[in-house]
Length: 253
Ligand SMILES: O=C[C@H](O)COP(=O)(O)O
Image (spheres, rainbow, N blue to C red):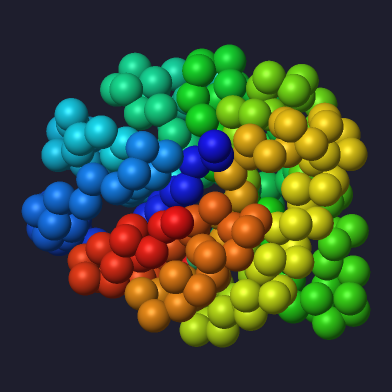
């Protein structure tokens, strides 16, 4: 049974004490969830150790970094390596978020290098993909997103690709309050699963969690997560409000 996942992406928000408070407010709700549920907090680098300590020992709760370097180590001022994250027991890392692709010029090729480093370190990549509005309007979103997967992930063998979490985030729905309809989300998720199945077989495709991201809120999470191929969400804005994120965790199927 594949994992159903509520992942919070705080992005570049909150002070340290606001982050502590937010985590306390969420954790005190004590939402254990089902065995196949996972809750992940992708917090800014300086808060990783704090978030790790706060969630320590809570089953199925994990901490993620929001990015990592595509270089192993060396003279790359300002970068954070996979080895550094692993050394403080961070086991998940978002890569390829559309904001990184857009503002920091991350390419599918660079993301393939990041995937390799993360898997080598025994970490779980949360690989983001998704099309901009112009591509959606041209009707070529399927090819566009499939190509992101192919160029960054399809060099992996079946055992390794099963370790990757995929997050489909249509860029036109991020932070805009404009959510993809459940039909649009389900259609893309099913399509991506079929692309993976064509490459690796249906058994492998059925094991991979595909999260939806883009204006997920307490009031639309249940409907989105109910879609057969939507295995939870990667949540930005609403993950900064405890009551919202708690409801989103509860909406996992
Ligand atoms: O990583 C999260 C996504 O970018 C979605 O952000 P949002 O929920 O604020 O639209």
